Length: 363
Ligand SMILES: *Cc1c(COP(=O)(O)O)cnc(C)c1O
Image (cartoon, rainbow, N blue to C red; front, side, top):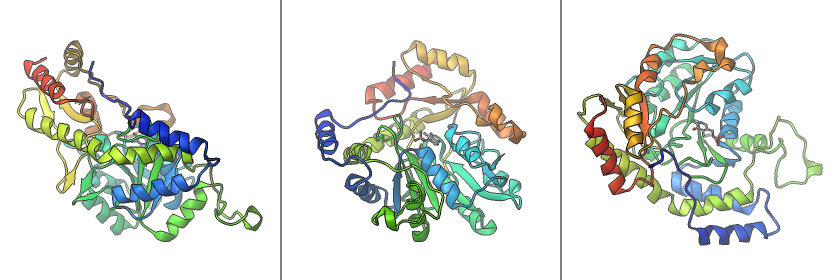
């Protein structure tokens, strides 16, 4: 079976050598490996202030704190995402306000977001779902017009670009996840890219109990609520090995995505997704809309290919019931969306096979 998602680790010898080095270095907490990982990530991503943390969820929580989100505030978000995007919002005590999606991309619709803004809105959470960049241009406009921070959850979109720059270089806060099945994993981990230098310094405090590193505990006076969100040297060592191969890995996702964009055009029963002008997705999943989805999934499964919706629309969870509203485009998208394998493990022969099987028909 060609899987939909798959964990990637660096070559065994390389990783075990690095791990042996760090594990017996006498320093496994947050230290020089973490500093180096952030520096190397910055080289890869082009972003200036990169703060590594222990998960993508922690990165999102820090972004919400920096954006000033407090209990009783409203945060506009999308139902088409993985749950952590939204459980982290509820963790702050803020209320989630769902906006609808653009039906042709699956990402949050800027007009719908604009219509949901009230004087309680503190932040807008946008998600580059499946690796497709959001409408960066419009959300930057909205951020400026209403003076409301946009947080970009790019957990699916490492290596995706807008106007030639990798994500992490456009909004005040962009977060990544290095959980097991993302483009790149540090076993668990995350990153937050922060535009503003002062906020970057505050984020460092929030990451580690509010304690300032580099000066002694006795001289520290905790002034901000912090958390145990730091990355440790062991995860950072994994990340350093991963960064050595990440460009080539992301290129494979993109090459497969472009191949499907080309080969699956004009097939009866399939509607391909669109991308916003200036953006290059990194295709963490290859998403499309299909008629008779159950039959489609079974047809692919019978031919050794895994296909699935993978995610459940988030607004149906009981914990978010207070936020329930009508989302007509999410309703339509929910009926037809499906993902097919697109990652580094999908070889030339596999993607040909996938296209042939789909072309045989399932309707
Ligand atoms: C994986 C994921 C997260 C959370 O990342 P963790 O590292 O698992 O905490 C957040 N948002 C999206 C869209 C994700 O897919």
